[in-house]
Amino acid sequence: MTVDDALVLRLADLSKLAIAPDKVDKLRVDLENILAMVEKLNELDLEAVEPLRYVTDVEQSLRADVMGEHLDRATALANAPDSDESFFRVPRVINH
Image (tube, rainbow, N blue to C red; front, side, top):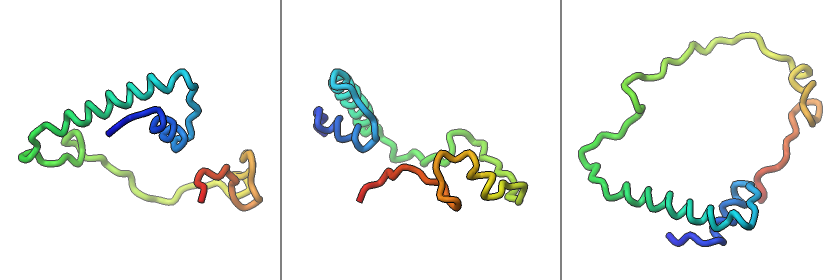
């Protein structure tokens, strides 16, 4: 995969990150190094290795799903920076 400044800027745009123009070269080099490391992992023979569900043998114990105290709508929306009296209003993050 070719990593160029255009790709770095496109990824920054998709990530909603503001990148200073003088940092683009360093990020391009870092991204190339990360991709080279991942490509190196492709050289491993993992045919006999079972996929891990968890890193350790300990499985996560989940708490019981029980109803507890909750906030009423007015209290929950009281400290919201913006609401329409029924819902939180947030900036649009997905453009069509």
